[in-house]
Image (cartoon, rainbow, N blue to C red; front, side, top):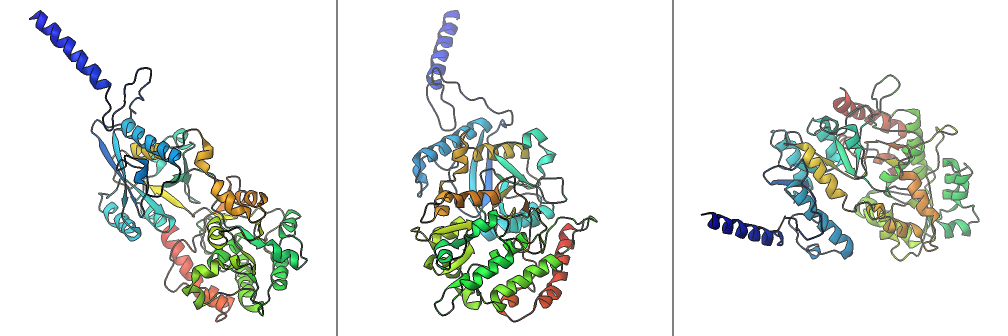
Length: 467
């Protein structure tokens, strides 16, 4: 019996050693000299499936075994890092992770029905601010402060979005260098041909104002030849003019009395509306009409033809409008309006832009989900240059003369030291009745726009922020 037991013990050790030398899906390899990563204390005994509700295909997850599973892969080295990171997360937390493409409307429906019913369809959702904010205000999201310490919330992977007036964080996103701003672009060749000083030089001297900009646009508009002082989406124009004059339409930031009130009827916003009317109607240095709605992109990308002086210049717009780098591109912050006091710092970027993550109420162990997504997002390890990936933005900010200043201006508008704002007028559908289009089409006056819409804005703010 002793001999038999000894033989069985030897055989079991041999089998164990052989098994440790093999790698199965989701298991660590015990290679001699290599330390196997320990399992996280957050791992559950039973393997857990985590679904991320989204509206487009994303890579890499537990569904993928090869970098080529992504049909659009172009950097094999980085793709392999992402795939290896996915395998490590599976082992670390004993989970499987999938992006669940619900479509745009499907994500909204899932949030509004399944979370309200107390049984969310997904363990975490990717949201746009348009439907992410209403979900937070409806009480559908977990606050990070309820399950994380302050130290845990401060990390290189995630940035939390805290609404003005709130001490809780419900939405968060992968932290990286922000290059998503909408600076004001200009065609340097047209500026030089008109013997005008470079707008960036005026900006450096503090002389870049609405009135100076209007002078330039008037001189650079020639309707006979089809040259315009300004072209671009009126929505971008309106938002940036609000910022540059320290104004707002629908901001959840409380005033000095702690009240959240509409800003449409304020003097600063009134001046923005007057300036919009001046651009599109009174001075006619630009236009936007029903035909533009039917061919939105062509109007947004119009400066690529070389006959537009100023335009909103987000990287994606430049890439589409000037793919061959024909334009001698200049980039400058938007000029300051008349209500900005000397030395006053105004926001240049709306913090509501981009996609966010939201952990729904009713999900078991939200802390594990947070850490899984945090590690998933931080596939780049300690290499922040991989995280930030600024090469694309640098390329499209360069222009035909390879200007480095352009990219610096973009970053100055969107870095963490800048004043960001939360402006909701174009993020949330206020009402079917809410419309300021008549102002730029010349069919109504500024006073009419304010009187017609101010109560709609206030009702929206009262409904959502009244408590």
